[in-house]
Image (tube, rainbow, N blue to C red; front, side, top):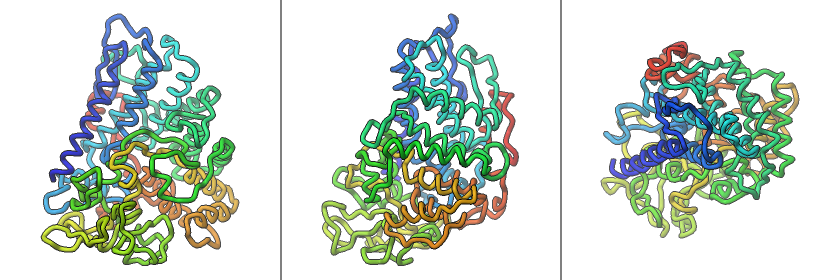
Length: 518
């Protein structure tokens, strides 16, 4: 499909730029299956400009968060929140999207390899900055350690083991491999070492840079999942005190819940945005919008791919079959403009979840292909055989803020609050008041009590398409429970809680061992 192909070219261009940026230090670097190595015969002597190398590292992470494939797909399309149904031949892509949703991905899956390569390259670039021969200032060193911890956490969370190459090791050296427990300890040590020299940045500051609040957020997320990472199969109550203290530190830095749910994603500072990247938000917008839904600064319309499952939509309060104003929905489910309220402000685009007849900015009904009404349906016939209107669409970053503005949120305070609520629950305390504070602010009915299933559902409603769903489902023991269109052979298969080590990586580094089940 032409529009999506064009955007994929832009995404590939960003990936090329990120690879080029990684090479622009005083070193000649090569990429050898995810491990960037120094090729000069004189040996590593440090990076010439640590701040420039740090900027390159931020840019590399930006390029890895921005696409609709890669990390975003591994975290979301493998869950009950998103799927990409094939429409005729569009979005077929040799099944690369379908196997993510069905949990039948192979070790040769391109996104599995790309994410492995990208974040392992981040780790090596951070190693160069951190090396004592680079003489990085304390603040640069601290930021590099935070970004290394974040990148290592991504690899640990997805693959369960982390290769580690020292800056002096050339391509002839097989990188050592950190086990799950070794990687966990390494990440926590990096966070601890970075914390004293990271700045205190509050909600009105430059929160696209590492800060004490961002480091505490990462610590909370790692500790909440530490039992999983240690192979214990569930969160460990002994880790929860660290989660609570880390979240309390974020609160002390001035972060708090903020009303106006969709305003949180408009690219401006707010009380909840703990850490974000300047990655463009276009891929979050256009993936699910119809070809016939252009905006003032994107006349080409959407790419008509990403949808959600009806069961996930039903987890929100409101009319199960429509999402117009007055349908009894909570704020986070959003609303669909109709003839009475579509205008230049919203440009006719829905907020949250798009279902039913869609309208343009003038309030006129939009037509789909073949002169049929553009009515997004709740049900899908399957992962194949879809028309251009099947499936409820999802839109959190809104085109009214600019078609491709930068500002993808990585860490948000509502997530931190829910992590604290979960930590309280896992130590026998009652999290109901914390959860209800959030629900009341979002226009949802208060809960009488909060169970594990309630808390998982609340995280889904608050944090959908924010790249945490897979990790959450695994922590609650739900990732391999059956949902619509999952392959029956994958139901209950806990080996799917980890992605495979890419086949190419196994060939290039015999110290790696393939994960069970692959």
